Each structure stands twice: as C-alpha cells, then as structure tokens.
Amino acid sequence: MLPFAHNGELKFIDALFTSTSATCVTGLIVKDTATDFTMFGQLVIMLLIQIGGLGYMTAVTFLTVMRRQKLAHRDRVLLQESLNYPGMEGLVRFLKIVVASIAIIEVGGIIILTLRFWADMPFGKALWFGTFHAVSAFNNAGFSLFSDNLMGYSKDIVINITIPFLIILGGVGYFVIIEFSNYYKKELNRLSTHTKIVLTMYILLIILGMFLLLSLEWDHAFKDMSFYHKIMAAWFASVNYRTAGFNTIDLSTLTDSNLFFGTFFMMTGGAPGGTAGGLKVTTVALAILGMWYTLRGDTHVHIFHRSIPSYQINKAYTIIFIASAYIVLSTVILSEVDGLPFLRTVFEATSAFGTVGLSTGNGGVLSYSALFSDAGKINIMLLMLMGRIGVFAFTIAIIGKAAQSRIKYAEGRIII
Image 1 (cartoon, rainbow, N blue to C red):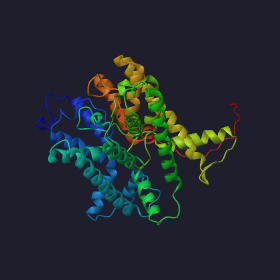
Image 2: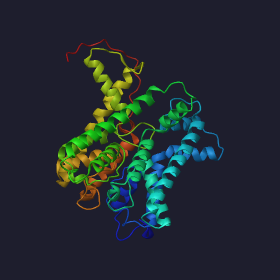
Image 3: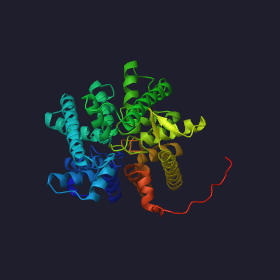
Image 4: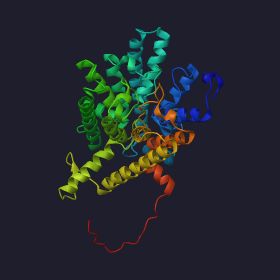
C-alpha cells in the first residue's frame, strides 16, 4: 500500500489479494505486476514468493540455526512437518542442504534467464527480470514481469526448457531432489517409495497433460501453430497446469473440454515438502492404488515391493473428498454472488486451491479473479491459503482433533 510500491490507485483488497497470492505462491493477479507495481513493489512480491515457497517455519528455523542457537524439540517437530522430512535424525543438516540446494538451483536459473533476456533488453533490466522469473518459477508462483506473461516467448527454446525445469525441481519437493542426488552419487542403494511415486506421477501427468492438450487443441487453439510450436506449447502448458501459473498461450481460447480436464491436473498439485500446493501427487497416487486393489478384492495395498498402510489410503480419500467439497462450495458461492460462467469460475477456484495461478483471464492481462467482487476475492484468498497450508491441516485447525477413545464397539455389518 506504500505510495512508492505501486503506480496509480491500489485498493486494500487488491493489495491483500496480491500479497496472499505471492505468499501462497499462486500467481493469480488482480493488478498487472509489470505496470501497476514499481520495482520496489515487485521486490516485495518476489520476497513474499521466496518466503512462501521456502515455508515460514523453514525460513525462521534456518535463521535460528545460522545464529548458532539450539532448536527446541517443539521447533524440530514443526520443522520436520514443514519439510515433510521422515524422522528427526539429521534434520538440521537436511535443512542446510535444502537452503543450499535452493540457492544453487535459483542462481543457475537466474544466470540462464538473464543471458536470454539480455538479448532483448539492457543488462541491468535483464538481470532483474532473470532474477524475478527464476525465483517465481522455482517457487511455482507464476508471477511475471511481462504483461502478457510469457506469451512473447512461446517459441523460445531457452524459456520453454528453463522455466518448466525450475518449476519441476521446485514442485517435486526438497526430499526428492536431495535423495535423487545422493542416489546418483552412489550414496544410496535404493530410492525411497515416496521418491519413486513422486517421479512416476510427475512423468505420467506431464505426458497425459500434453496428450490431452495436443489432441483437443490441435485444430483449435493450436491450429495456426507449426508442429514444433504445438509441442512446445503443450509441454509448457502441461507442466504449468499442475504447479505454476506461467502461460505461453491464451488460455481463454482453450476448449471447454480442456478447461474441464485442466481442473483435475491443477487440483492434483505437486509433491509434499515442495513449493507447490494442491492435493499432492502422492495423495492422488494412494487413492488410485486403493481403488485398484479394492476392485481386485485385495485388502493389502502395495507398490514397488512395499506395503502401504490402510490409514494412509483412508487419509488420501478424506483429503480428496474434503478438497472437492471446498472447491464445489466455493464455486457455487462465486457463481451465485458474482453471476459469472460456471466453468471458468470452477477453473479459477481450482487454480487458487492448487496454488497454480493459471486463469482464463478477465479479457485483458489480469486473472479472472479481477472480475469478482470483494467477497469473491476473499473466497479465492481462502482457497489459496487452504491449498498452501494443506486441506488436512486446514480442516483440523477448524474442527480440532478427536479425543482418543478407549472404547471399541462390536463390528457392524453394512451392505454396500
């Protein structure tokens, strides 16, 4: 809200929406980041993206460790949950490796993007654009300093490779990156089941997203593109469909079928312990496995020669059901309050929940959320917070945990 942070008028609700979108690494905008904010305002947005991607608890704990202060047990538990680290042993060392890995990956992205943008603008501006977009991409935020996002670079091989790979590295989670690195260096004999599921789901979902985009848009949104351009556009959109909000094509030109399928990809989100939100790929994978083995009449779920506890399967079902209920309820409220088309509204609501940031647009350079009333914008902000915090944690914070019961009733028989 500071006068030197923005150009022109900036309402409080729009400032709050922007800061929420940045902190939740979503990327939905109701003000043009490129023109409505000064460089100082853009710097504030970038710092919020970095803190939101790293995680508040992770950032605070790292500063504590750097001051050589001892962590209390409660702080270690909170850090473990924040990083989704499986255990307490080696937690501080893992934190240091995480921060170092983030720095290395982002600096690498900054160098590549700065060199690319330098061909189109002065070096100082290119450095700022390279830094902002590298941070935004790795943290799966989707904020851009170009008014048309990255549509001007839809054919550029450097942008179409660098941005998606930064998004993927941020989305798979710190644990997966570090474990895969240790496995590659022969420090591990076997990848964990978690890492295998995450990598498998990422590959399958990217391929499936590309297939749907190419098959449904080949003679529609992609009809005037060359074969190379179509592949680049489908690859870039498929990666961003689930985790980040960058776009090289106008999403308002996509078919209703693609917008509908896109909601499932966005709802899935990224991996636990990373910079992406949503249900998480592991949650969806466990739900699919549970359904598959139930249909086969097998009560023991297993994958990669490892058994999966029934509690985790039930938790996956619960998360998906609650998330679907939140999105449907929010969409109905938005449609009724603001009177806007249902499909585009559910696409926007799902994008907010998945902290994706993709949008069919308001007819200009802003997100569809710019058309919502103040109440509608608050609704979208709640969805962004829910998607970033996690459905399970968000719901438990509202209803509280049930007290442990020492009574066990006789088993009832129910016909299904």
